[in-house]
Length: 304
Image (cartoon, rainbow, N blue to C red; front, side):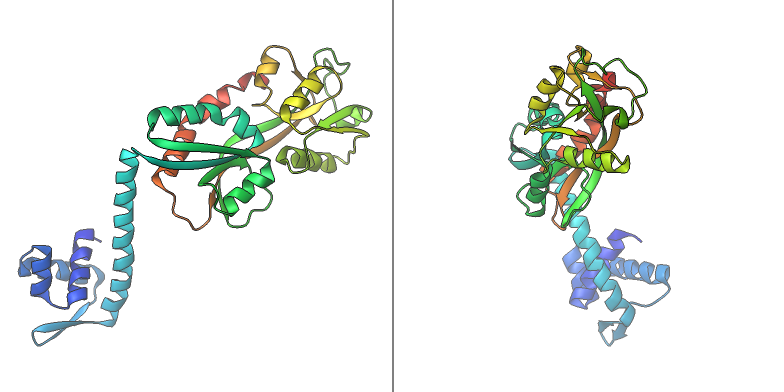
């Protein structure tokens, strides 16, 4: 279906007069007639009935008018969005993030975005996973990057980058050099865990339940950095994102434990308020994140 012909049909359907439609479209009346005839031939049905010098919409014409208005409106919105995306000289972008992606993934993305679009004022709001999800649900941020939640209301999710929670400890801890570890080997080991609102905590507890395991010794610490320091000191073990521990593993401050129970896979996703139009600044941010994904994943390649 030719959009040019559809636009002609829409104008005729609105004014119900071929000559007036031709004048408004700066076309000849014969050209308008050819466009309508082409549409009618394509669909094999008449859209107008001729009444004297005027015309009226047939049932098929009324139905096509409804779709034509939606199609043309969508085309106009597309053109406007692309034009805005091309310029992006000013505006605001509010980004939410849960703790791990906010602290260990988005820094390079934010820097690259601000370099490319210096006129956009970007604000990054880092919360625990549940609070970050609420920001999206309430429309307080334009987009957020967080671990894929089990349930989300009023949110549209777009998985975009993989992650693994690694069981890590200090290099001198007694279990650091053992292989083939199972959680049952860690029954008397202290686990450092994040607070209950953290997706990392939730993922770890699901992992424990799936293995029928309940650690006897637990210490709850309110930040990833505190947990890293406690584990590095040899006080116990912790499940942490490979992005959060990439540098520590690279420099031998932390070591990942070896065993089938010592890794938990998960996904980070872009979360958008459902039903809201995504502004050009948001589309540009999502496109840049997807483009930078290989580099972001490469920064943690040494943790595998």
